[in-house]
Image (cartoon, rainbow, N blue to C red; front, side):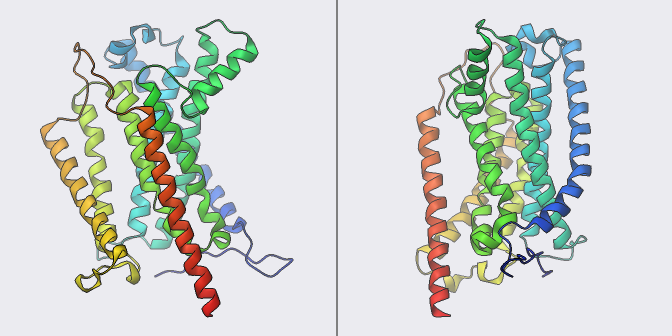
Length: 349
């Protein structure tokens, strides 16, 4: 296993610095190229969206026909473009992270150290694209000013709608935008946690960083729920579902063949709550693979049918808040358990 880069010592104390600035600077240098590629991809997506509007083939026009004036609503289409490139980069960084955490095989052609660096850099790019996606929506609300508000009231209203979880109170967006904001606000600390692992402890960082998969799932859910390009059932929406199959397969492979020996699970280990929970995670990942296969093969992807009346929302804001409370509680319990084990090991030493 290649050694991980470690933070340099503090000049004052000789201890590892709380922030790994050396690795962060290196990643920021590589970020310039990755961000440039991401912006180029975003521009291509933007041009494609505008072309589909001009041709009248965009599914968005079936939902909001007034958006056919592409020049007037440039910020809306830019918001969509950043959303799609953000989801693509999220897919890439999650795939790289799962590859990094899976035991190498004969198929391995790139070192784990390089995959890890790519994972870190694409993670930073993903956070930037997610923020740009939200910022473009914020600027569009300012431009439109549908309620004719004054400057201060308009800025505050747009800020609440776009950046305050639960602030958007219209239609499907009440749940979809809440999911997207939760994903954004969890992605920032989890994505940047690598650079403070000498402060949190490598084991705590590693355990909490695994929740990035949940953040990615929220991002995909946000897209399928609110992305007007995939609002209706059809091949494109099904393709978005199908792209999640490699993620689920890699997650299952990561659970079945983890890189670290202590994470491997054998039949003789199935005693106590911990190993049983780990077994449950493997079963859940396998079930996810089956569900994704069924969705892809059957085309029953949960999309709306054109011309049909939409039903009531199956998920509401209180449900999302409750699930978030459970997720944060689990994360907190895991962090406390790791900290307790670390303190116990320190006393033993």
